[in-house]
Length: 141
Image (spheres, rainbow, N blue to C red):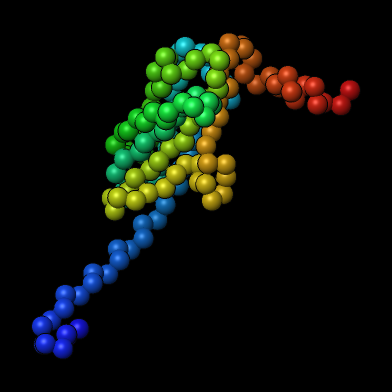
């Protein structure tokens, strides 16, 4: 493009190609004991366009601030939430952020197709798959 004074105007660079979202696999735990570390793993296939994975988490208390852990991207990324971040009086909310090499990325769970976070019941209950008291009360007798 040329201006009226014949000085060339620099071209606007083309937008980069959109990177494909990697396939992800993660099995959220149904429950976790309080005051003990919790390990979470996210699988990425393929991890080639991802540069880092972040885990954002907080107690299921809207007044609590999110904490973030970050790891380099790999086919399997594991995070350990410290024991002190799992108090007995709040369940845990968390989600993953996958950062790509273009400084954008994706969330897991994908907020366009699912609830945008996971919730883990924090309890001393030794039977994590037992129905909750609310589910038991709603069950027909």
